[in-house]
Image 1 (cartoon, rainbow, N blue to C red):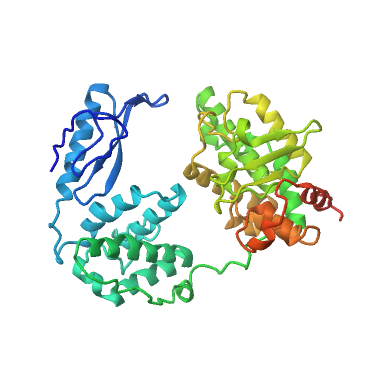
Image 2 (tube, helix red, strand yellow; image 1 turned 90 degrees about the vertical axis):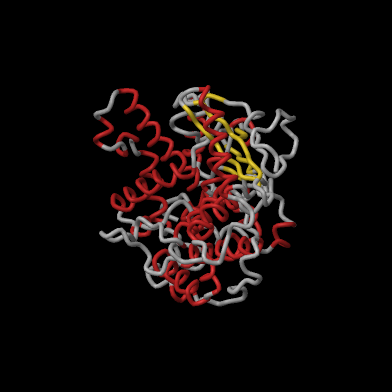
Length: 434
């Protein structure tokens, strides 16, 4: 096995089993926390590349700390140590989780798979009782040998469906098969996949989750217009918690900017149908085109889109388009259209947006008496626009606009740069008395 302290090599050189990139990685200092950071990798004996990030208050402690973690990972990953009596929880921590973290999955998918992995072992704060017990049928204390028991796995997945819904249970099934059982086969703990082709009836077991309407939940025209008018006139300070208003001036200013960004993000999604990740990825230089009369066109690159399909769309409401233009002037140092409220040069993280979105949508539901917004989040605007505009815009144009993967033949013969049909239809939609 190669030495842990590898000699300095070119950064592009592939790591051999047992080697790490700690000595050739370049440290940097985070501007906000002032901590020193180092991104590095280590290749385990089985060939898996594990990526890690180490941080330290002092530059001199950074590499030693990273080397200690690399040694720990290598010690944990010695070949031939797994037995059928080994604990599943330990196997997940040392094999399955690193495999997901080092994969080339989309960040959002990786986050969902890691969340599903936690539920499999009962790591669920939402359903933890006063004694600290969560998920009666979780697999945390099972052995690797128990993974041949299909009924055991079935009860675990069905419980996830009952408590968290069908979609999350489906992701847990993928994780179970691909990142637990498949890895066990690679480690020669078992020689087949016991759940391959099994139907666990997860959809019918998802009793606690209300079934969604086909095509998603859409607001009525009245609800849509009332929400749009309200957000256009909403003072961001209304969304700042009372305790924040007592903070130092610069902290209160930060919270106001966060609320303003959340309002602008929602207005942008309402009038474009952008997915939240797409809206968060827009930059002024690469994705925004402003016509002389105040029309704002947006380009969604294929790598930004969930379906890997690029498209060009327009902000459908002129008042929102005006806010977008004003935002560019107000935050002239910003790289992203809706950047991080803490640093406009950085992208706003998905987790932070999700937390803030819940607060805003609950506020809208209570203030405007729109019950759907108690449970629906950012995807509601895609469903709403698609539903309200279907009488005025052809299915072909709508499919191209929203970047859907269905009906590829129709989308293939659509001019993705022509946004005139949607723009004309929006003028009908946004008239209150139509």
